[in-house]
Structures are given as C-alpha cells and as structure tokens.
Length: 359
Image (tube, rainbow, N blue to C red; front, side, top):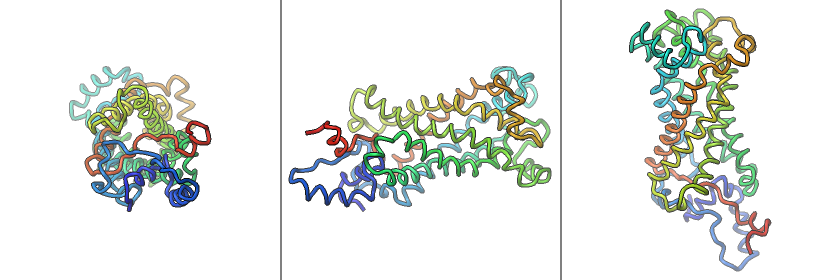
C-alpha cells in the first residue's frame, strides 16, 4: 500500500491524515522546487516497510490491535483477582474488611487460599472483551478523528484527540464488560450467593432478568470512561515527555527493549492517575452490584464523600501495576506481529513554517 517509509510515517494520524496526503504532495510539487524532507520519521524499532505484517490503519492492523487488547487486559486483570476481591470487599463492607492486609487475613481465614480466586472466570471473560473493544476501537477512533481534524489540528489538539478517541472506545468496551463485571461482584462480595460463573449467571437472571447484568453499565461508564481517557491521554503524553526530557537518546536510536521499558514506566504513571480519577465510581459499582433494587444515586448518597474513597490504596497498587503491564503487553504484541508503531508526534513542517520556526 505504501511505497516508502516516509509515506508510512505521514499516515500516522498525528502527522498527516490519509485524505490530505495526495493534495499536499501535489501542492508541494507545484509550489516548490526544493527537495522536501519527510514530515516524520519512524523509530528504529519500526522495521522497514516491506517487513511490516500489514499496513497502518488496515483491517488486519485493527484486528491485531484488538487481539493485543484481549491479551493485555484479560491476563492482567485475572492475575490480580485476589487484590481486586479484597478491594471490592473493603468497599462494600469496610467494618469487616478494614485494610488490605486485614482483608486478605479475613478472607484466608473464612475461605482459604482458593477463596482468593473467586470471580476469576467472569474477570477473564469480561476484561478480555473489554480489552478487545478498548484498544481496537481506540486505534480506529484515533485515525478517524485525526482525519476529521487535519494534519495541523491533529498535532495542536492531540491531547483532546486522545481523550475523545479513548472515551469513544470505552463507551462500547463497557457494554461488553458489564455482564461479567456484575457477576464478578456478586461472587466476590455476597458470601454464599455463588462460587462460580455457572452458578451466578442463571441465578442473577432468574432474580432480576437481563437487567441484572446491565444495571451497572451507567456507573461503569462513570468509572471507566474517565479512567480510560486518563489511561490513554496520560500515557501518550508521558511517552512523549520521557523521550523528550528523560531518555538520553532519540527514540529512533533506542532498541525495542528500551522502548518497551519506556512504555512500562509511562503506563505505571498513567495508572496512578487512572486509579484516583475513577475510584469513586468504582466504589459505587461494587456496592450497586451487591445490592438488589439500589440505584447509583442512592448508593452515592449513602457512601458519602469519605466512603467513596475506601480501598483507594489497594486500587492504586492494582491499577498502577495493571496499566503498566497492559501497555507493556500491548506494545509487545505489536512488536511480535510486526505492526507499524509510529513514534510520538512531531510538529508538521507546514505548521513550523506558519509559526516561523523554519526558514
């Protein structure tokens, strides 16, 4: 599809939207006899064009990004089920589960080691589906909105672009997550209700119908959309800042391993902010899915300003680690499948000329 590496770089949504490439190239040939330098350059970690497994923005590219989301979200959330279980129990019963260590201690005494794995099945299924939509649709919306904005505005408004693309992706991701999240919370926070997904799902349907699986979708949007907006926008801008101010050499000179380390660090920083922004809504979701007939507004009033912050320390540890691992795994999947991995955005040459930054 592309004939040169420069063309691949220009297709990066933060440099040159697809629909502008042909028109810009014709204009440059007409108005200038000087040799035009490429607007962007890909990092060294991005292998030569003929070695890419697919074109940037192709159907295969989006599908593999979605697959990377399944692996990154499904495996990481399942791995921290014990911590998530204790966090949920602190939120719904703070009198019994007073802290992280106390929560683990009480759970081990009552349920044994196997009790810490309660809810692993709905966690794995639910967050795998969420990861598919979250990462796959993020790439789709990022390109779509960038093409709508144009090259220069995509750079100037890149943070808003990240926020809009991630919010749009998470809207659909939460619809996919909601049923399994509801079952997970029931299993983890209602002793004796059910021990497995096979027990919980039919019981929930018999008691409340299909609404039992989706009554928490609005609080999920309240929790996950701000979380994901922070997760993607903070990550993208942190990566940009790390390469600009911290990493001692340009990204193009970094090995794939070094780039993945930067990915992990940026992911953890983003995760800390994600946990803080989304925690009040997470508390509401946990209580709401435990109780029958409650509404989000009622739960929020009952918890109060202090109650919504119960379990924050556990969530920061969990989400910080999760977010870092998710970005690391997701980027590793891109490397493994040889997907195009555009570097952080540079200011377009046309904008530099307008601002008088070039001769």
